[in-house]
Image (cartoon, rainbow, N blue to C red; front, side):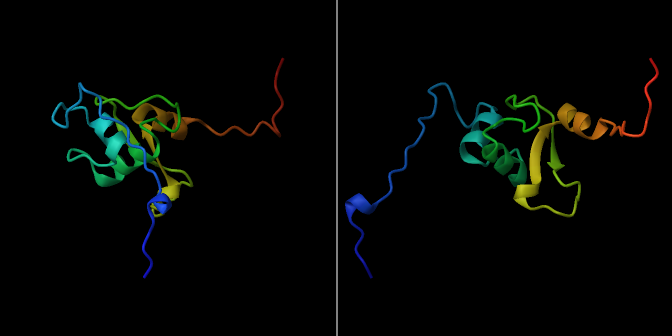
Length: 112
């Protein structure tokens, strides 16, 4: 066993909780971004919010407590639930991601 010296201890900086915030104020997006957990959210969603710093991976806007969210599988395989394959998106961003038609203009001629 080795006695760890004071200067060998890594410094962890903590962000102070805003004075107007409370875990009971209903702002789950703030607390999930801060801690990665919230009793009103599934644990996977809360962890994704923390991992993404509270932002949608598609549009980059912050999630709010009114936001509708969906979990997106980056590779399209819904059986692959690795954290690296998952992203949390606004519902409308998720619809845009899957709703965009894939056009192949390589063999088509355009009329002028």
